[in-house]
Length: 410
Image 1: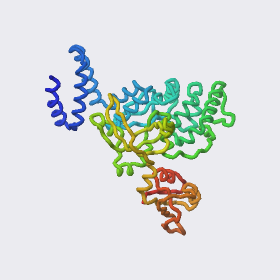
Image 2: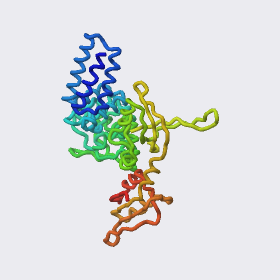
Image 3: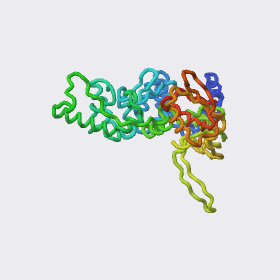
């Protein structure tokens, strides 16, 4: 009865302070549910004090509060993802992991938080402590060769280096992630050689140095990853997408289709049964057959690498979770191509034409293919008879080709 008296007062006050009415009612329902098994007054008073102190810290020191919370749960990727989303909601930038700037824990810096190296999969605190100790003792790492020669392979092993590569921890050293991953074995070899040389008091066999820096280690070349592939490997290393999302390329199409984010959709489903449209990437699937022989499948989605799909769904609350039923499923790439008339590709160098032809492929696509390039000192523009696959994924791939200046939708 007391809670019923307070409902209107709470909701009206929340609305007056800028909270949406539906959200205020949802919050009050949570409080009312808790009142059914609430503590005695002395216990409740202690909790209220802690809640007030916590709210004060989050309101007045948001970066420090979120960084401390993430450090406390650095072994739980789901919790870290939740904190990362909250940081973005608060306008706090999450800076990617870096061997030159990250520490063991999450570090607040004004309106930003530097991601922890120890929170990455397969890295571990001893490896990070070794990297940070070397950095503090002898300065920032100049490039990947400098890092390799200064690392201690007994503390920083192959799996740790692979994770650091995929997470982008070497990005600031002027090496792309694909090349870094391809040369993990050479980093370890350089680190072991440098360790042995220091232990024996010897100089590099091919370098008698003086004050000059030793020559860079010889790196194998690797083709840069497509944005979607780069993010998929980042997901494997971090446990969630940190610097972007595979569906970012589809933002215009998703907006035109009325697709909601999972956060928006699930919040509505907590208070009522809802229908809507989501997009996601397929992580895994298992096909089965029912008793009648009809096929069906269990499919795991990441909603917010694999094929990208469009989902028509309905959902409702089930306890603290949201139960979602998929009513329809279609290819997001096909939908995006249907809604695009084609692409215009601008080349800086005609020598890029073979690379362009290989990427477009002999099958081409259904979209209009317009090409702009320099011929005899003049820029010319014409339609290519063969069509082109005009999906966002193809657009990203074309932008990576040497000699391609710009790719835009028609």
